[in-house]
Amino acid sequence: MQNDFILKVNDLSHSFNEGDKKIFEVIKNVSFEVKRGEFLSIVGPSGGGKSTLLRVVTGLIKPTRGSIEVNTRKVAMVFQNFAVFPWLTVHDNIGFGLKMAGVPEKERKAVVMEKIKEVGLIGFDKKYPKELSGGMRQRVGLARALAVNPELLIMDEPFSSLDTFTAEKLRSDLLDIWYKYKMTIVMVTHLVEEALLLSDRIVILSKRPASVKEILDINLDRPRNNRSEHFFSFLDKITSQIEL
Amino acid sequence: MAHYSHNLKIYKKWTHVLIVFCIIILPIVFILLVGQISQISTHALILGLGLSFYRLLVAYAISLVLGIMLAVTLGHGKVGDFFVPIFDLFQNLPSFALIPVFVILFGYTNKMAILFVASSVLWPILFSILSALRTAKTDYNEAATIFGATGLKRVLHYLIPLSFPAIITGSIVGISIGWEAVIGIEIIGLSNGIGSFLNSAAQADKQLLTLGIITLLLLVFSINRLVWMPLLKRSQLYAE
Image (cartoon, rainbow over all chains, first blue to last red; front, top):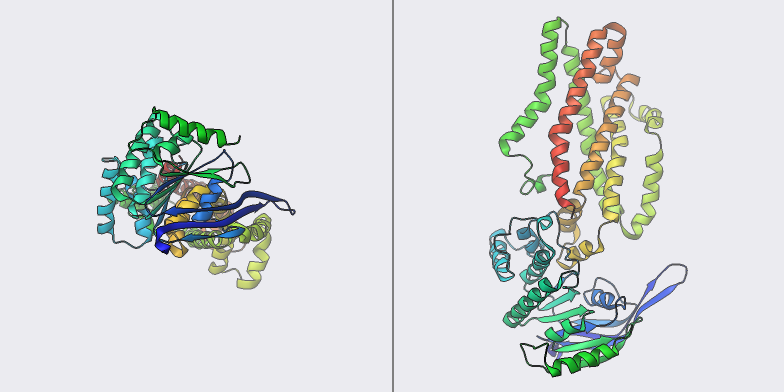
């Protein structure tokens, strides 16, 4: 039955050592599970340890206590500030993960061109990130993640550095991609509305040190209507739980 | 830096040839022309300049490889916190103070000159790369890790491109320090190279001295214009 869950976080705590015996606790006894194919969002106040939680999940940071079970090796990540490499063209940025995995050039190119089409970057493959807008850079970031065909896609505030219109367009494109591939998505955000528009379930975190306040099933029909009464009642419910 | 060849399109192929041509041929043509007109023998000047340039290039190559290797292996994290102050100590040592040590080890030889020059070219390159690696955005490091850049692949496809602008600026400073070092050591203890040539010309023939300095200037200028400026321009692409 282990395959029901793609990710299992067990009683996780994390502290940063700030030298001189000062310990700074950011995550406290967090447990949750992520089902295969679901879209799960983690919301909580800014600076509350959400990003740290993602970094522990992806193995970038070793947790102080607790454990993480990841039942796939195909993990990719999308970053808040895009983190696309300025020295690579759009094409080479998207193909980076494949190149590291040793995928031959011809095969790689085919995948990259497919992803370029999917995220709407046709004609930009030879451009450098410097020549692109923020929204387009994030499309590169998304395509780079999709190119490795991830089973688990981790997203750290992926739309927070973008203007509202760009973010809205990118969100709906992300949903289309998710409907198509049905990979698991774990997204961190501080925007409750964004989480409601996208996710199957929402994990609400407390302020630092972050612990789970509630995990909500969002049983709203898709495509979601952010003007419906039901939507607003969810919005109120979650917003009232987020401590500032 | 063969690894860049596919995406570092500063020059097209034919211009590359032209550049090499300019760097090597321009000063020589200049010397020969002046020599012809003013009826002075310029053989020694050409040989001397060539030899010094060769020493500098070998020293630079050593420094570049060593600088990248040291920065990449010992530059970051806790290891870096330990090693960087040590590097800093060595960097602060006036390089000419090391001449006696090099003389004891190698005598006044070509090898000694090259190693001495390398010992002063290394530091600007190393520190430039170190600061680039140590101030790199965490995002980039994480993206490289997540997308599988580990071991040698991380060095070739992430750390070196990341520090490319730093390699260029470090090299520009390094090469100018290198000219000082090579000419210095030639004046002090060697009987060949441009330094030694200028030194003896100063006592014998002021015309040759002037010609020597102008030629040196021409070489330094063409390297700067034809090699470093385009690379520097290219590295601006890396800034967001």
